[in-house]
Length: 325
Ligand SMILES: N=CN[C@@H](CCC(=O)O)C(=O)O
Image (tube, rainbow, N blue to C red; front, side):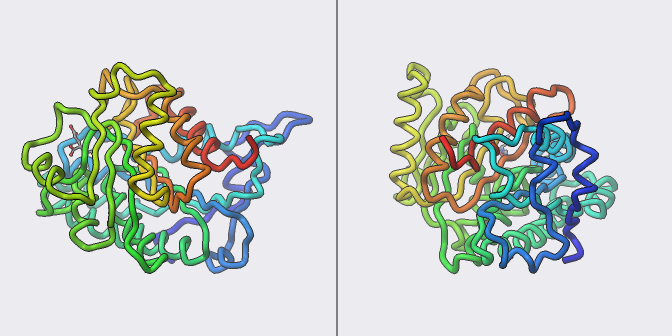
């Protein structure tokens, strides 16, 4: 697969600060030299990056998510291996090579034209995810724009040979019109193409959803949304109960999306002053990791100006893959 850069232990070593007597995840996490070896490996999770923000640009958003993957690695690979964190259950695959897409996109301003590059990225994401899911593994993708939800849903659906349910923790529905591809219509495309079965948006903000999307959701019994405004008075524990109820609608069998613009004051393409806390998200992941989650996608974060953002993402992933309490 020419559009995927696989990593070696030497590639990872540059992110790790070793300490005598300690082991960091980056020193023992599994890497592959051949994608076909996925099938034979017993690890449950496969982590990869999608370093792009072309879909965000095509949706009039703030760029920056293209460097998130790299910053995530600097944080994640320095987590301690201990009785709570086991690198043996996890393959760190590499990243989708987006260099050519980014070079092409830099010459383009028109959103529709950027959309055709997003289309091409979709194809690569779909291929990588299909391969991971066919090998009976759970993909964990770090974006990138939310446009990549489409390739991830499609790839998971093709890999499982069925349409899939999705729970999206997001201030927005991303159910915009299917005119051209961008970060605001990944779920409408996935639904239109029948890769998406039931869809739940958790933490939707009243202020940023147009009437046509509310109307469409209100008449579709395969879609449910929980407004963030309806959770303003709720404690952390009560929010966890709401999350569990939302996952019940999806029969506890779903792909999990975390758009970081659902998190309060968290730098992202549509940063918000009000939303979930990082600790709320960790609580949701603590529920999700015990359910039948077919993939995890974390997207739209911009890590470059604040080191706590990449560190938060690394908490999210380590919480999700944790098998010991
Ligand atoms: N993935 C993000 N989608 C949002 C972006 C909103 C914004 O940039 O303000 C949406 O289309 O609604």
